[in-house]
Length: 389
Image: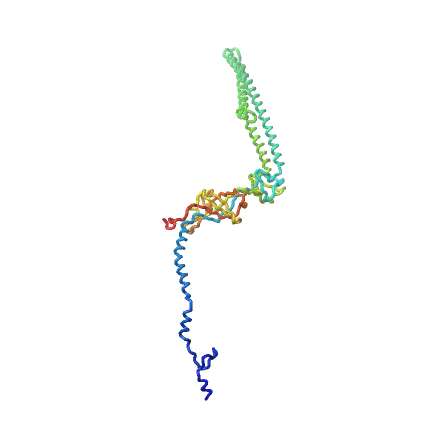
């Protein structure tokens, strides 16, 4: 009985926390304690609300700044479809022959007129000697023709005197025949002689005319002005030209490349490219911007060029020219757009930019390098373009 009574007595304050007798109900916390804890909680949503309203307030300002930048911008046309270009030529000659020696090595810098390689000149020297001998023989032939022409004129003059004598004998025989003092046979003989000598005179005159034509119609002209001599002289010049072309020289200053493709002893046919010469001292930019980017691009506008190889260097220049036709107009098989399958494609128009390479601090440019071209057109977008005015 006593133990049951003790168990029914409520727990005394001050007992160990967390220890609760079975069947004993805890009292709820005091109201003042709950109010104080709620008063100490910070306002979590005030900071987010202020940030949101601040962003909404900045949105019109951002739109105004973005619109201004868009309207005032657009005057620089930029294209990365651009490459460094330079004068380059395949070194060759118009005569065939065997390579005798090569005077340069790969990637050598050469000056204009410097010897690059030589062909064996023996066959061309023989041809030149033959042409010179033919020229001398032609001069002798012309002098002989002049002497023959003079001799023909002399023979024609002598024959003319014989014809005059025959004409006198013929007239005398005809008069005597009518008077009956001579026979018919004497008259016939005189007539035959006259006709025969006239025929010889005509033949001599034709031969003289033929010889005169061979002398160009002027027998007194100098030998060096006669057609035959000029022809033989031209053959000498052609043989000399071919001999000179066995020594191949640089047409301009630059750098040679692919030189190992030839060697002494190799046979080169006429017009065969031996190696290449590139003029890196005079370069330009070949760009291919879209047709829609060329609205305000004009020759003479200032250009800034950066090359991918040297991202920290900038070259100045000007727009030199814009092609009169798109690139596809020069393709081997131009696109045939029909009404059934036509698809509009933005075309590329070639543009050439002249570079200012006077600044020697800039690194060297090489043909084929990729570049980025910025053209200052001086024409911003403006409001008319936005609203379609």
